[in-house]
Structures are given as C-alpha cells and as structure tokens.
Image (cartoon, rainbow, N blue to C red; front, side, top):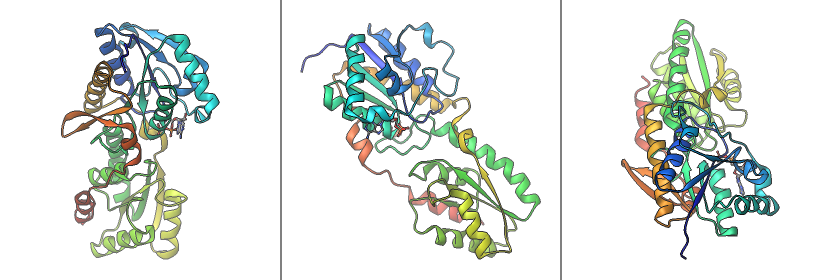
Amino acid sequence: MEYKINTIGVLTSGGDAPGMNAAVRAVTRAAICNHIRVKAIFRGYKGLIDGEVKEFSSQDVSGIIQRGGTIIKSARCPEFQTPEGRQLAYQTLQREQIDALIVIGGDGTFTGARLFAQEFNVPVIGIPATIDNDLWGTDATIGYDTSLGTIMECIDKLRDTATSHERVFLVEVMGRDAGFLTLNAAIAGGCEAAIIPERASVKEQIEDAIGNGRRKSKNSAIVLVQEHAIEGGANAVAKMIEQEHPEYSTRVTILGHLQRGGTPTASDRILASRMGVAAVQALLDEQRNVMVGVQNEEIILVPLTKAIHQKKDVKEDKWQAMLTLSI
Ligand code: ADP
C-alpha cells in the first residue's frame, strides 16, 4: 500500500527505563532531519486516549540524553486493553493527523501496539526499552545496562556489611518473568547464588546455594532472588532458609524502584540513539509492525509478533559461570 508519512507520534509506555529520553530525542531529531513532524504523546496509551499531545521541536529534546526516567511520562493504561479505549486512541491519531506511531516500551506496550496496528491499519514501530531485557530478537533493551550497573553497586555495598557478619543476604531483583537481570547481576556482583524463574525448583536452588556455601566454608553469602521466582520473593526464600537451616540468619533487601533510576550508561544512550534513528528509517522504508533490535552489534528489525511471543533463553554458560565462580 502506498502511504506517505508526514507526522509521527512517539510515546513511552509501561515500566520506565533509563535511556527512554535518549530514544525520544533520537526519534524526534531523526524525524525532523527527514522533514517529518513529531508529536509527543504524554503518559503512554493514556495520553493517546486523552489526547495529551504536543508537537516537538529539536529544542524540546535538548539536555535530556543524560536524564533517567522519561520526560514524556509513562503510564499503565487498562483502558487501552478494551476496544472502546483503542477506538478513542485512534480518534486522537485522526484528530492530530498522526500517520504512524513509534512506541518505546516493553512486552505489554508491544502487545497493545500490535493489536492497535491490526485494528486500525496504523504503521507501528517498537523500540525495546525495559530493564528486564526479556524481549526476543534483541541482544539488549534500553535501560538494562544501567539497571545492571545500579544493582551491582548495591551488591558491592552489601558485600561490605555481609562480610562483617555471618549472614545470608537475600536481595530481591526485578525482572517480571525473566531472570536475565538477576543472573547477570549475580555474576557481576560475585554473588553466591541466584534464584531465577528459568531454573527448576526454588527449593533445590536454595539447597544448592546453602550446600555450596558449606562446602566452600563461607560464612556469609549474597543470594539474588528474582522477584517472581517464588511467590513472596526474597522474603519467602528467607523464611524457607530459616525454617530448614536455623543456623543461618538472613537479611532481606528489596531494591525495588531504585533499579529503574539513575543516569543512563553510555551503552544505553548509544543503543537508544541508534534505535531511535533506525525506527524512523524503518517507517521511511515502509516497514510496519516491527521492533528495532540489535544483534551482534547490527541493528535489525524483528516482527512484533515474534518479539512478544518467542521466549528468550538464559545462556547456560552464564548460569555455569555463576555457579563455578562462587567458591
Ligand atoms: P511494559 O510495556 O513495560 O511491558 P505493561 O505490561 O504495563 O508494560 O504494558 C504497558 C501498557 O500496554 C498497558 O498499560 C496497556 O495499556 C498496554 N497493554 C498491555 N497489554 C495489552 C493487551 N493485551 N492489549 C492491549 N493493550 C495492552
């Protein structure tokens, strides 16, 4: 189908991630460079429904590349999951004469975008921004590297106090259904164990961790727990350890939203900048319903359906490295 894109809408949605601003900046400036107007949609799909839209100039995205969070705000929007909500969203596009959408977010954002694109025949491009790095088809998502660094710093600080006492420190890490953030942070932080949803029974993982610690005669340990590996998260693991191994005293730290904050790393800023430019180029190339990804340093396009539905695997060598190096 022949179509000409004069105006792009850009939004950030779902969980915020450091580097989203760099992506908004890149989309805005790449569009303007190609003589396309850009309209920022505030508060994700909520703003699309409510018509919270503002045209952006190059100056509107000045001085934001280093800022965490998202200046155009994000939101969870249950109304967009209803046909009536999406109809209202489409009316905003028509009223604002927006021809295509670039959505910056994660799995949920893309699920909504795909549905919307199908229903109203709107070209949509996704830019993966989530600290979870759980989208198939891309080696990295915007925000992941920054979050990993933040978690690692927290572990380093906890290590100082952990080695001063004989305790098991349990640190709860975000990640929705995926253990990438937890496992990689465990490697980077030199942790004794990581409990992630991709591995068998949590009980077994705990016994392994305790067994390893004993064999290696360690008197303190830091164990990362992915928030959804077990109902109740790190607190539930602490309870299990104290019941089964009363000789160990436990301390729980829930990093929570700290993990989303902070100034984006160089790596996230570069990724966001490349992906933003590539998303605009994809629209110029008449692509639609794809996610921009990066594989082996190359920018690629992945069908949204695949990015959402295919499962990304935890690399076995990383799991083995974490176990091997915890002596
Ligand atoms: P993320 O994009 O970080 O995974 P969410 O899962 O919260 O975040 O999704 C962001 C938004 O995407 C939701 O608030 C909702 O508006 C929209 N969304 C998620 N799932 C669907 C769906 N199945 N149908 C339509 N919209 C959806």
